[in-house]
Image 1 (cartoon, helix red, strand yellow):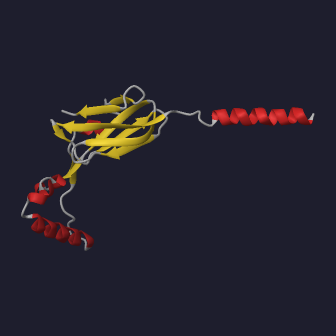
Image 2 (cartoon, rainbow, N blue to C red; image 1 turned 135 degrees about the vertical axis):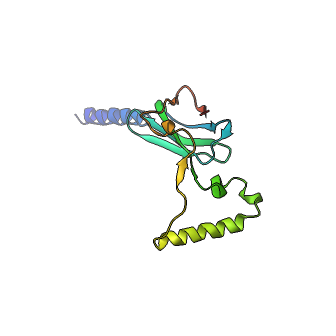
Image 3 (spheres, one colour; image 1 turned 135 degrees about the horizontal axis):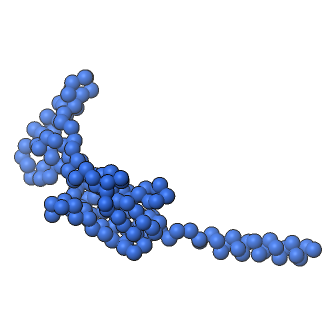
Length: 156
């Protein structure tokens, strides 16, 4: 009876060890987001799974992104890219070469101070890409990560 019990425990241990690696395969996925043929820099890319889980990342200045540990599957993709409605601070593009950077920074600090004391915080942000891409119910962007580990999105 003791050898039967030991055999049973051994069988359970072997089965559990075999099941430890069972689960959805995950991978890093990557791509590039462009809007009107320009990189969508600092955009938020979100993959929404059918199980309700989401995975996301932000694009770099060149519009590229990488999202790690994404389970293989079908996803709806949403993309948001906000920028200030104030053209002088628009997306920080070209600011390193702009000699007015210090003046812009001073103006921004003054706006922030005003916001803390009840004044204006400055201009609001707006979504640069069409709003339909930021809403899972209207986005027509789909991605099967099992079939494609890399996918580019041209939102022209």
